[in-house]
Image (cartoon, rainbow, N blue to C red; front, side, top):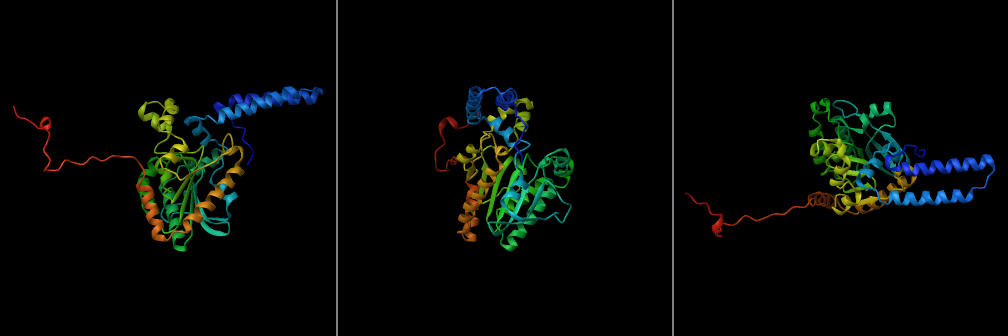
Length: 339
């Protein structure tokens, strides 16, 4: 993949400095003028700006990076980290959903089943991929492949990258909520190791439909949330212009998810996001899979299922208050009186 020329709003000061550096370098070459000191000063300023900018990203800026059009997608990771990928199609009920891709592959010489959500790079491909928003048949295809993996004892890797399941009428007519619910139930019972990785966007049930894993990993500029910032802003403020505030309120940061035990590991990205050095991310994902599969393979099937159950049962924070027993006297001030 080529380094991106797409510039996010908050990156414009950095791009202005890059432009100045390019112009100064061109001027020096054309006029045979020594401006090495000026070039060194701008390069130093660029490095300082990068460090300051990308070390202090807020939640909304991370969401923008997660949606970067040049960010590596599922097929990019599959092509770089796996070998001999054989894509399988169709749910054997309705059709083939191109927003979810999956098939067999080899990872470090071992056969695995890889399933991922795929976006498009341009308008034509985005229309084909439905902008990464799966229909019900996509989830049913994913479940068919997971059941196949269980039958042959293949570990499963799921790659999450969707703003959410498609919310249109056709999707509802074909029971998208039921398809996601069935996947959640069945994934909790699959008798093979499952590792799920959030690559970019992890939106609501659309992400969870392939996200019930023994290990859930997330790249540091990705997000995993019950709702998108725009959806949250539309509900709470009645205006999508409040999306940055919604992103902060939702605590859309990978490290927040780690603190809450929603994810098991945050995968490091290069400065500025995965699109600036995709190979770094491919290598990071591969190393993480090696580590987690080694841990999971040491478990028996009953242990694997018990730990998966415990992992998701312990999520969330709540408090319980015991009801007063019949033998306990009711406080006088709480007794009802009749006039």
